[in-house]
Every structure is written in structure tokens, then in C-alpha cells.
Image (cartoon, rainbow, N blue to C red; front, side, top):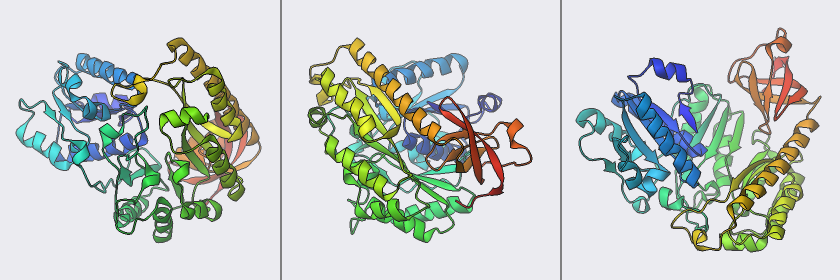
Length: 445
């Protein structure tokens, strides 16, 4: 969960302005920025907007808990709930005494939704949620800046045409639809002109980009156009991708384009072929291993993150061991481990379930292995020179997305501001974070 703006003290001082609390994915974070801009333009005051996530039952529980807490602490504020959980089951939020309005995922990014509230007030209509499956276009929402950030997210796609048996998100996001390339390039250019040095391409299923557009451009084609038409952009990064859908243009960027960051987060979900089949995934474990092997051949410094679910229905101990081995076979560096959580309405919820304590044990084991993999990678960077995008004067991210901290006592005369790209030497490691010293000379990318 994140909150926009992040500074809670600042929020408490500005009780009259709309405040946004964000759960879940990077796309939600991006859309929260869109809502923030629209709410400010509409003059919406004394409101708290919860942008929810539905990927797990726990995410929904946390949102409901946060809503109740917000009401206790802000008795006179108007509370709006939106996001995937609100889209999928608006009634559960509308029935909460703490909630004044439920907005759908399509409605939340429209300026008129907030303008209407400012003009008409909240009234008696507590649910404004349309059929997400009827939506056929995704607007290229223009966000000119992201408060307190050196990087910016750009939404290029929304929705998903696939129906993985564990996933409820298509019912919260609708079918896949893409933003035309020209609009994407225009937004990237605006953000770069406003000082952002790294753009993260985001969406629900970004490797499906373009299938619904004239000429069927691919994600690789879009990224190639961005880098060609916005030559002043130093860094382009992708959010989560489906490796089985990676196109030849994207592979060429991996091989040849230094401004394309050597860090890919893969939607793997499991390492056992039978479980992948029961998940209705479109790749095999062999596909995943081969992709990582080929990408590393083309770009030796590339690192991989991945999502893996522990305890999917019918998963036996040997099946789980295949997922464990995949961490080494794909040489994964950053791992997001999800204990399986049955979502009502999904086929997986009707399958024979793994016992809850076993799910927790498997997730714990996988997280331990992931921690070891991260530590090995970070240890390999000790003594190395890194190009770092500064997120604030004392902390930044390397090209492989490792966090690196620069204690003020070690900086000497070298200083940096958010958005600077600097050269640094890695001097140590503190948990999952590198430490380093900034060189006097700035880097260019």
C-alpha cells in the first residue's frame, strides 16, 4: 500500500485537499496520480480516495481495514472507494457505513467524475460502477509530473484477454486495450521535458500491447519508437511482462539498446508444468528457462525478477520443488512470492486446495531462497562502479534496479539531487540494499 502524497505529516496539515491511498500494482500507482490531478482540478476538498487491489483476499481485507481507520481519524471527510476490488464487488464497499461513494475503474480516471462531485456533491447515489467488459478504449491519461519521484510511469495498456484460473483481475480491468503509440510518445516526451530521467512502461498485460490497434504494433515496436522519437530519454524500463509474448523487436532492444534497462520482471507464477497447465498459463518451465538464457546471452548484465505463487491448488511437494529449482535455473534476482489465496469466482477456487499451513510454509521457504538469490547478486556488485538514478539526495537505483544508499558521512563533496544520474562505487551492503560513494562526475545514462 502507498499513499499519495507519501508525506503523512503534509497530508495532516492539508486536510481540505483530496488525499489518495493506493494499494497494489504500479498501474494503480499511476492511476492514483491521474486521480490526484483530476481531483485537484475539480477542487475536490476534504476527501479520501482509496484505490484498491483485488489480487488477493488479503489485499481486500487491508483496504477495508484502512477505510475503517480513516473514518475513525477523519470523521468529517468524504470517503471514496475505487480500484479493482471496488469494480469487482462494489456492494461490499457500498454496504460499509464508512464509505460515501464507490467509483468503478473506468470512472476513476475520468475528469468528469470528479468535476461532477465538485458541482453536484455526493448525493444519494453511492455506486457509480459501469460494466468494465463494455469498455473498448484506454485513454492516454496525461500526467505531467509525479511528486517526489525521479521516474514516472506511463500506462500503455489496460485489461487482459487471458483467463488464468487463479486471477480475478480481468473482471476488474476488462479486456485488453492499448493506448495508440503517438499518445504514448507524446506523454513520454512531456515527462522528459519536465525533468524525468526514467520512464516505466506499465499496464495489466503490456506484452499484449497493440493487438487491438491498426497494424498490430508490438511492445517492442512501441519501445523502439519511444527511444527513437525521444532521444533525450536516458532510461526506459518495463514493468511486469509475459516472457512467452516477447517479440523480436523487444529482443533487439535487449541486445543493442543501452537506454533500455537490463532488468525484466517476469510473470512466471510457477515452475512445474502441470501446475502451469492448471493455472492456464501459456508457457512451460522450459520456455521460461530458455527465455532467460537467451536474454542473458544477448545482455550479460541483465537481471530478472519474477512472480511465483506458493501452494496453488493440487500442488504437491515435488511440484513445489520445481518452482524452487526455477529460481536457480532462471537465475532470478528479485522474487515476489504470493501465498495462494482463493478468489471467489475463479476456476482455481473450485480445485482441491492445499492446506493453509502448508501454503504458508512453502511461501516462507521460497522467500528464504529468494533472499539468498538477492544477496548473491548484491554481493557480486561490491567494489563495482554503478550508474545510479537518484530518487532523493541520499538514495537511488542502479540500472538493474538495486537500491543503493549514500550515507551523508561518505558523500564528501559529491552531492546529488532527485533525478540526477550519477556514477558511484559500491562500498558495501546493508541487507537488501547496497551502500556506496558518489563520484564527482555525473553519468549520462
